[in-house]
Amino acid sequence: MNDAFNEKQRSTVIHRVQIEIGWRSILRVSFGILFAYLAILLWPVFKMLILAILIAVALHPVVTWVGRRGGPPWLGVSLAALMLMALIVGCFAVVGPIVLQQVSTLGETLPKLRDAIIEHLPATGAVRHALEEGMSSGTVADSRLLLQKLFVLAELTLGGLVSLVVVAALAIYLLIEGRRSFDWMIVFFPVEQRVKISQTLNQVSRLVSSYVAGQFLVSAFCAAYMFLLLKMLGVPMALMLGVVAGICDILPIIGFFIAVFLAMVMGLSVSPMTALLIFALYGTYHLFENFYIVPRVFGRKLKLSKLAVPLAVATGGMVAGVVGAIAVLPLVAAYPVIERLWLAPKLEPDTVREHEASSG
Picture 1 (cartoon, one colour):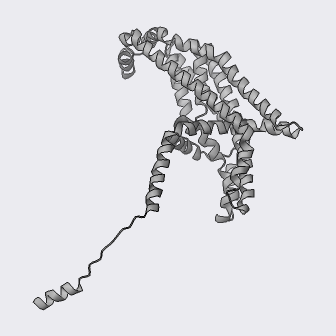
Picture 2 (picture 1 turned 180 degrees about the vertical axis):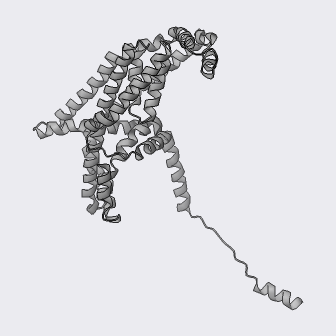
Picture 3 (picture 1 turned 30 degrees about the vertical axis):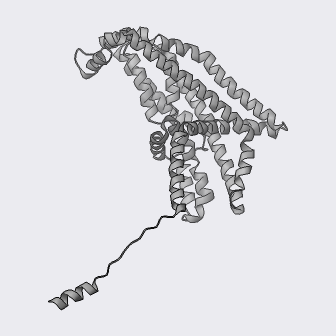
């Protein structure tokens, strides 16, 4: 018995695992944590940089057009900057005061709007109960609460104006120094990849430029249609709702429901039939926009998969909010360029051809 026990002890092998962490590993982990912290801290700046890049790429054809006609680079940049400033100042000078006036009078008209909407609703129901509880007369008429909301609105507006000025300045700077910065950074890549990187940048920039310019036209058409529709139906705050519809039109699918919901709520102050007309007429326009306006504005330059669009918008929105949902679409549209220039050698011979045929 003892011999068997001793034999078992001798056959038992004890393994010791020793983990050594060097100073280099500790420094790498520390720098990784520091980089993640700085990325979170500077994320608002990154979002403004993304918008500035989109604007700069959209205005770059102006610089190229001046250069093709023998003009100096500074003339093209100046013309692009003047166009950007004229667009911003024009929007604030024409649309801004009217929208601001409508927003400022919202506190005064909210009780009347609430009573008008409730008047057209059934005597019982979840919608009527929610309106009566959430927009009670005491809540709506509380001057202190309204004053606090106006201060918050003023703070958000001021912050938005500052961000807009920063984005415009960054866009102009990118127009001036963009090519020089690219030439400085491209030397960090291997020589055999520099030509391909340059081709990718040129083709992607054309796609992004087409997207930004085309989306501006599509959103302008949508805002104008919504404004005229609501104005003819006698819906309050038609201009503000039209501007909101134009902004929401950038977001596929979800933007339609946000814009039409807000317009229908205001339409209830006129009559339930008005709200139904808003849904029907705006829905008809949305179909017309998707199947007629968008193909003619964008042409075949942006080949977006019908499934990739909502997935990309949802992912971009979760990562970076509205800015991410907007910026992700031109990046998705640029995938065919990346596939053709970078991924084609690693894919099956007919993959690129079949993708181009299915999205054409």
